[in-house]
Length: 203
Image (cartoon, rainbow, N blue to C red):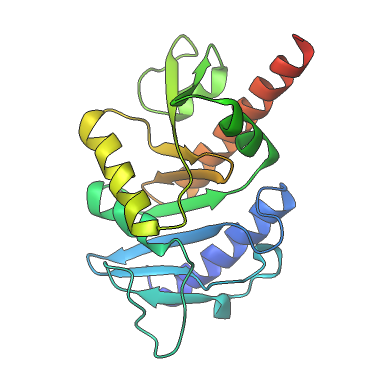
């Protein structure tokens, strides 16, 4: 994929996520890996519902801008951490839905999702009869320190699902390409919304 193709894909994905209510204001960030040391990612401070290809820039594998004076998303290092750890990852999505924000504020170390048909969007089983514990990490404005916490999670749980939530902040998911990552995000957000509604009605 060329950078121009990636920029078009990222812009379209941002508009789609905005239409779903997952990236309010300037929240969220999106990236595509173009090669071992090239990542196309959203620029800092862009509204995802109004994105055009010019709102995407190029960084290297350590998150450094390849464009003089340009500033990538504040959380670029979290994207780099995913690509560094998972060679199969080709796209990363980060969103701030109501469901993932509220549930993560109530959760402990994970959010357990069980019995949902859409669990098939995650590795682990071909049917709904499976369980996924979505990791929840405490929020931290020190992004390198937060990435170290994510790395420690993966070191301790190498079979963790391809996604995690930052408490009160938002969710990260990834996939082999943008289609796979978006499918995973849509499935996860549906299950989280169901989980939130079940909790509300069980009180």
